[in-house]
View 1 (cartoon, rainbow, N blue to C red):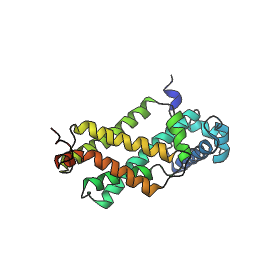
View 2 (cartoon, rainbow, N blue to C red):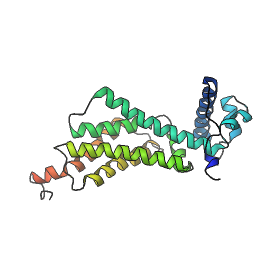
View 3 (cartoon, helix red, strand yellow):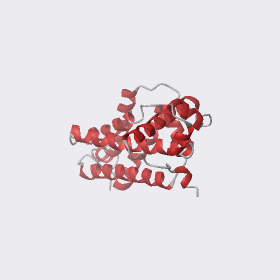
View 4 (cartoon, one colour):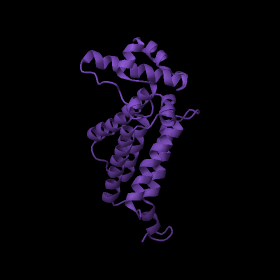
Length: 217
């Protein structure tokens, strides 16, 4: 079945096995980033990980399954980055601060290797489990932004749910596209400009009601 070829063959039950699995994933990330997905064969991954090809196949049936695992790990890391940041910094005091937090966390989660990010975005197979994880991650972020917009007196949008979806997808798409792009990026300037753009969008109604255009509603 197609789904089986994208799933790990086994989950490690001991520390040694988990360490081996992590070595395989780390090696695959390096090989895919350096050589591209087409040239990133399981033999090259096993060689980089310093394990036998038989050991690699104990955990993953093919490189597609490895790339799916890397993509899932990337999503988990993004969720964890946001959670830690929110726990350590406390609630933001303004809507602009909240949007800056979202932008900064997304940027931090895309810094490890832009080339690998491009491979994951463009070539990772979409298993049912991965699609479910992507949808769950996106909905969690949308729910968070929706709550920010509903609670903030600064926010003036006509459709809160649509606005939350636009904010989340704009951040994800722009952060990925520009960080994974070929040109070097001034990250502080990028974060400032993206935060300003989102803040202007989310608070546009308040500016219009203060005399610039017509009030919303």
